Image (tube, rainbow, N blue to C red; front, side, top):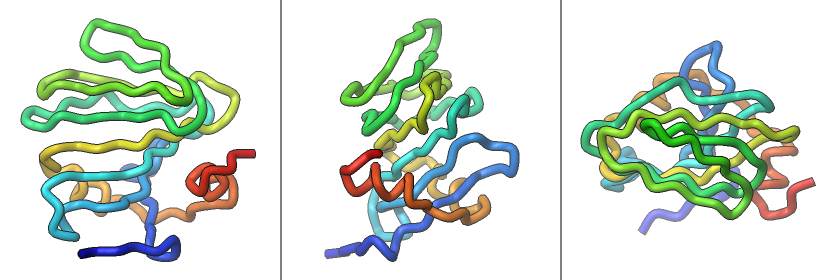
Length: 138
């Protein structure tokens, strides 16, 4: 068994210009065959267009609102909504709300994503983030 405490979590920004960051929860570095992260999008932030050739990716919106472009389909998302992307789906997730957008993200298999995240810069998890992650958004 692997157990984590709040102080064990680390957040990363993959590239300096990115407007999203990821808090790793479990990934292959822990022996998992998947990636589980919390993705935090700044207001107006979005992922670059990306695709996973072998992995399924799931997003569950913990807090906020946005839109997801998945292939040719544009889908609005808000707290409580979820998306499941098949392998090979080009996608972009964007925060269109007035607060940060928080998504639980699971990818199976990892397909090198955790390693990409860890190659980025470690960034702080601030009080606003903790409020959402602990279930008490401001």
